[in-house]
Length: 409
Image 1 (cartoon, rainbow, N blue to C red):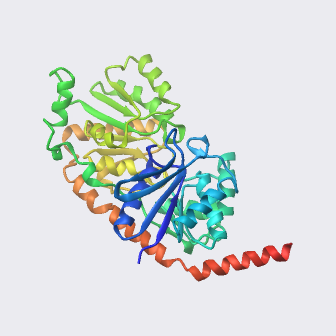
Image 2: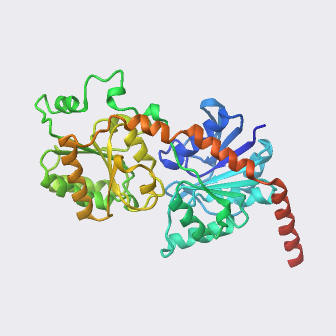
Image 3: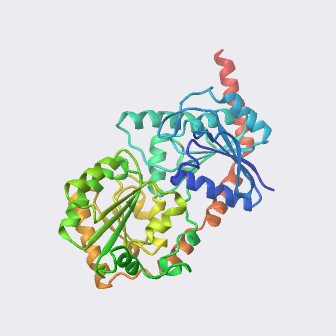
């Protein structure tokens, strides 16, 4: 017998991102396993009201304003009337919230517990303990997860971080990683419509006079400081000066996009650094197959789904050794650097030479990723978490809190 589940988060399509991707694909696989899933998020521009996606997935785009990076205005009772109405109308049994910075998820969590519903929370990111934003987020997390049914983290590093930040019992925290739809991220050789190899495509772009030794480095990321945009901006000129046969293709948008444009102009790298701006998720594969190396200079990362996507496309990964990134891929698929300029430049240049010499073989990467990361497996493991939730415990917790409130009156 399936559950009626509400996925609640501020971060969902049409905005691209890791949380959005996770929520959508997990919901699709849970529907395939016989569960009834709805998604509750805030409106995106003119997209408001109820929409239906593939497989009958129902999405509530609530008329709530956002304040920063698609996060809704924090509050306790702002969305209570509409959330209560949706929970009752859809006969929701489990409320599954996603992401610390989703104020809507926290608010739904509070109201779900008062209504006697079971709750699960998934954390997708890592946060510190000293800066003002992290202190505020950690306090909110402690308040909403004080009696959570269960917490899911996308990596073991994320699990340790969440337990320290929230004070949740470690026994109530599980690790379930992200996954990819490997058939959507095939290498160029697996594209039936492909006209040639990556080198042939580069030669065509160069007017037929391309150099076989040219190595293309692909970067697809949100251009924010925590994603290493400043570090990327610093290392591009150094790598280009150290090796004249290196080319960059950078996709993504954010406040640091202008800095990259200025750096490209300053060092006259217009022919070697291509800035694509924001790309849709369905276009990510087409960008990745242009490259030989995927560069990920992030300063903090709980998992890094884009790394799995890159490897599935047949790229070798160069990334920083931070957060949960070392847990994602085996050593033969990636090289790690410290999150600072010199280390990242040296590591990247070493990998470039290995690519040219043929020391790195990526032909088996796609098949290996398909076996390591599957949304079907992620949905099955999430279902086990749902089955572990004790409704009697939820009701006892609710009665205890109500009794405490009455005694304090």
